[in-house]
Image (cartoon, rainbow, N blue to C red):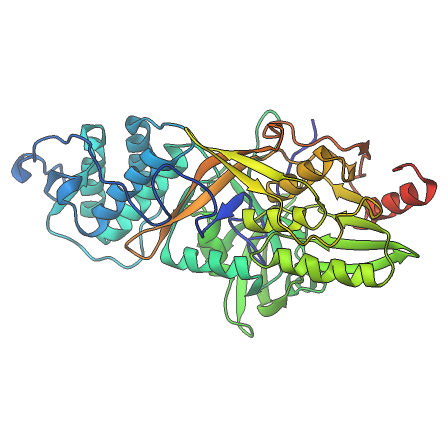
Amino acid sequence: MPVRRLPVLAIAVVVTMAGCTSTSGVTTSTGGPPGTVPTSTSTVPEPLNPSTTALGDAVPFTTVGCETADGAFAVLCRVVDLVDANYLEPVDHSDLAAGAVRGIEVIPPSDEPDPVEALACAIPDDDFAALCEAAAADLGATGAPEADVVARAIQGMLAFGIGDPFSGYLSPQELELLTENQSGAVEGIGALVEALEPSVEGDVLCRLLSETCRLVIVGLLEGSPAEAAGFQVGDVVVAVDGDPVVGQTIDAVTLQVRGAAGTEVELAVERAGEDLSITVGRVALDIPVAESRMLADGIGYLQLSTFTDDAGSDVAAELGGLLDAGATTIVLDLQNNPGGSLNAAVAVASQFLDGDLVLRTQTRDDEQRYPVQDGGLATSPDIALLVLVNAGSASASEVVTAALQEAGRATVIGENTFGKNIVQRIFPLPNGGAVKLTIARWVTASGADYGRDGITPDIEVQVPVDAGPNFLVDEALRIVTEGEAA
């Protein structure tokens, strides 16, 4: 079975845009508007006596309920509340607690110790009792700041307790990175990476890097510093400026690689059993979200690389230029587009649809409908439309492809898409960070669900492994000129 890969434009462009993501309240959740935190109603055990709960070198601790929480543990309590109220499926607290303990154990602590003499451990209920012991032991052994221990617990809670590679904790710095990604303007080296773990069905996405969850370079931006420095697709990043990546999230590693233009970063990589160290300069990357050109008389080509917040207006501008140039056929290229903003997906699809609905999203107990937006430039059936996809076309790309295919508006060409039909929301936290949670599934207007196998093209084309970037574009041009798509 071929490897199904979802490009994550981490070092150069995007980290957490692999899912349809909303930070502005577009999606519906059961926990109120973005940023709100439901009040916990969990029962908690009686506080424990510090003198009876000091374990070895562990700092003494008391256990209190979330209603009295403050500081770092207040953030953990809020994350639990957010998971309870908003995650797509109910999650057992014992699983969350076990994940939190594992996070403390396996994620490296901060390099800036700030020892505490005693710990007031706030937990939602007695399922989390072992978390207090693990936190107290870690504080005693490492002298790590309390906030750092709690952050690792939250990371583990989401990475291991839920088991969803698309949900996770974002530190304040990582949240800033996500905001930067959504704008499409970054400074970096121009390498595209994924966190991948082998499975019996091929590589699968993972979130917390480990000995098996590896950070793999899957693409290089043309003309980028990474390409010039000699990085290759398939290189496994193992360290950044001497710091191992094991135990970190892909977001955290991206922060290390990013930096001001004109500075340098050293990456240690593994390549076919060989260890290499490559130093590369950072630059301001001009990454066009949408590009267009005329392929032939009457045939326009529009490539969309990712669904940033402005992708809808970018597509409209490029599409308008093609139509003004006389295009009567549009080839929309969504190959290796990992998705992004759900708003942008609706806006892009609406440029070609003259109907009622683009998609629906379904939470645990609610549904939201996303209507076609008025003002599409290419809604006329006199404008032929072809959509190019492959196994790297995911999430928002699949929203657009499925809507156009189901409406009979486009002929889809290429390989089966990735198969990711989740919607996520960013929930800000009082420490300046956030959690990204899967809150819904999306389906087409008729209810079709592509979350398992992806979208099957109308015309299936197997793309060779060594094919160039224009292989499917050339195939689409041949199909148009020979009339196969009619």
